[in-house]
Image (tube, rainbow, N blue to C red; front, side, top):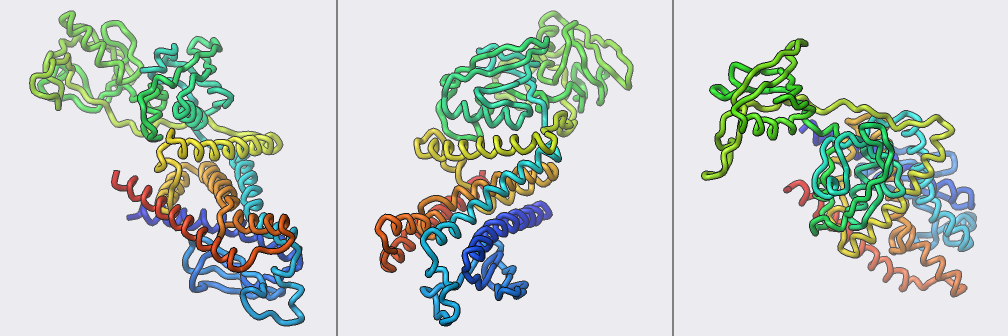
Length: 455
């Protein structure tokens, strides 16, 4: 319940910031063009708070925090006093009306850059992109444990977040991609991963696991969390022991244990080196050959110690993505450009069928969950989400769909070409089409949200 309330809160904060900047862009340019603004509202419905400015604008915070609007004086929407006709929006030149419309998305774009700049200055904690385990096509390309991912294609990967995004993009495109790495020995070289060998599928959630790269921070430490009574490890190993070697072979992670236990089991037993309470000691064990817990009847027996891994929680972050105030500005521009290109590319991939639609459209529930998760990771992470959402809002609003800013801009471009405004009948028809498309998009977003909750 607390988590749900927290998600709602961070969603309201995010929408409040994004909508306020968007609508203020419209308001600021409208006032500069001499348009009278009647109301500036963050949210819809019944006003919870209202104040009237010196210029006559009503500043409102409304009950439904899912958007906002700027209501301007317009002869098409009501009677206008004779002494205020020159302040009506519809009386302004087409260029002025276009400027007012574009100002909202432009404000979101500027906010996106500012938020990325602030994120880089504060510094976003993350994980170093080090390979903990390599399987499948990653192993086939020569990727090895201890490799640090420096760049994937043209994308520099200073942290695991950048690396995972670049890996998923390459996997969706099913292309052979150069990956520059620094090996555990310190050698920098390029490995080429052929993503066309991946199994067919367009679900983004499954793609990363199919690549075969498990990052170091997701690897489980070789620390004993439970010893099964009567097992080979009973009386030899204790809870809290950290296993460092089996049969003379070093152990780095819990995943290393099973094949080494099988090896000494085939030999009739062997030594396990471990650290207990800060002291190093060696114990002799004889693994037992028996069906693994939960295995189907008649399955091949496995060599088992009878121990389970300790739940050590999430690994501490060991990297920070940070720039100085001056260097952060070009970094913010680069990140904005990269995410803009990727957003359009994701839309194109969805239409081509290479990416599942549920991975490209998210509604309020999905955004709320993401906002809560990012907020838990710290201010810099939340700023990065706000920046991405602000960019998405800017691009979405510029789509040439009636009702959206891009639809109004389309009307004004047609007016420039024709030399006169579209008829009210044509614009009304366009509004209905726009509403239908918008409601369809909202329905898809809610469907995707509910599907994720069910899964």
